[in-house]
Amino acid sequence: MRLAGKTAIVTGGGRGIGEAIALALAAEGCAVAVAGRSEAHLEKVAGKIREAGRESMAVRCDVTDPHSVKELFGKAKQKWEKLDILVNNAGQSHSDLLARVSFETWNQMLAINLTGTFLCCQAALQWMLPQKSGRIINIASTAAKMGFRYAGAYAAAKHGVLGLTRSMALETATSGITVNAVCPGWVSTDMAEKAVTTISGKTKVSEEKAREILANDSPQKRILDPEEIASTVVWLACEQARGITGQAIDVSGGQVMS
Ligand code: NDP
Image (tube, rainbow, N blue to C red; front, side, top):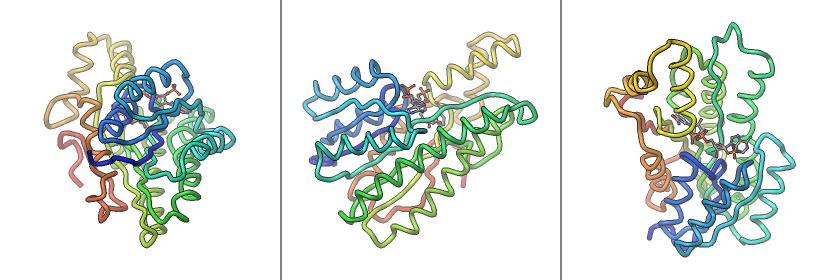
């Protein structure tokens, strides 16, 4: 096991990509705190991790709220002496033309996808800098590297995640900490299904056809499985990846090549 004795916090760990990441870290021997707003989802994942013989806690947290983030890290500190891995996975998308996006939606996209990541990174650094070790992995998107029609606010926030990742990587480069981003293409989760419903509703195509449209964004012509993102996260969390920092790793079937 590559992560035996390590500890991790995974935001948005109750379902989708976050659940796959939490389970994959646990499978490598890691104790995992899963954080998000829905207690039922979190308890389900924490239960699976405990059943697999690893320590886990389910912590209710809204990453857009600084007090809630402080409480999350406070609870982890009560249990653990060190924090090895933070995965900023919590995110939300919104579909509309930028000309129509409300001020409220714009702020919501920045708050959940960018500010939430910043708040958790800052809280983790207070722990990781004195211990002189740590891995921070931010789940961005292909929308962090290219523009997307109907996803401008989301893409702006995810581009911001890369700026945050690269700057923090420079600031921590001599502190034993690495900071990287993973940029998935379409992944089979509730978020992708929401896009399927939107495309199908607005263009009057079947949901099957809408899924095909998403799949065609990738040269591999397929929607990814959450486990494909999780295995990349595990790799970045491992000791052998200590030389990788400030990177934005694409897992998109070739949709982005930079
Ligand atoms: P889902 O919608 O399936 O899950 C989103 C997760 O984020 C849930 O666990 C949700 O939990 C949590 N979350 C949302 N808002 C908050 C909040 N304010 N505070 C804490 N947790 C929150 O999405 P995915 O699993 O697909 O996405 C995970 C990440 O991957 C996101 O950052 C997304 O942008 C990114 N991504 C996804 C792609 C895809 O095609 N699916 C493609 C590229 C990137 P709860 O609602 O209980 O709070």
